[in-house]
Every structure is written in structure tokens, then in C-alpha cells.
Amino acid sequence: DKMRLVTGNPGTKAHGEPPAEDELKNYFLFLPKVVVAGPGTILTLTLRGLPVCKAEYAPDQPGGVAPLKT
Image 1 (cartoon, rainbow, N blue to C red):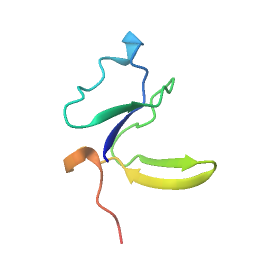
Image 2 (image 1 turned 30 degrees about the vertical axis):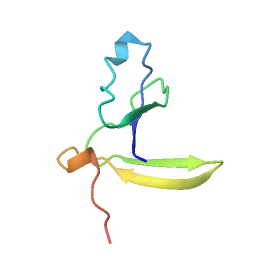
Image 3 (image 1 turned 45 degrees about the vertical axis):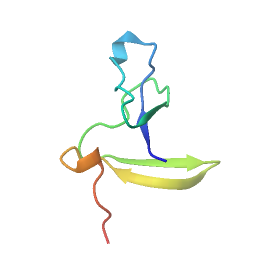
């Protein structure tokens, strides 16, 4: 399943309106500050200290994720 990670808090007006749950369900991380600063930012998700996945933000790509570099 695909999910959209949203870094802000849906109850905080300063974070803006969350994206509509059209075809992707939103998963809120409830982080207090900006995490994705701009193109090229790499986000690594960990579970119990072990990396689970890694993605590079690329707003010009479909879905906002850069293709894998080999």
C-alpha cells in the first residue's frame, strides 16, 4: 500500500491544510518543524534504529521522489 507522509500536525493551523486523501491515505508524523527543506533532501525512515527505507525529494519527478541511483 502507498501512503503519504505528512510532517506537520493536522490540528495546527500554522502547518496549513493537509493534502486531501484522494487516492493516498495521509500518515501524520506530528513533527514540530520543517523536515524536507528542498530538492535533494534525503529522508530516511528507521524502525527501532534500523533503516527501513530512504527517499530523495525531487519535486520535478512524478510523486516527488527521485529515481534510484545505481
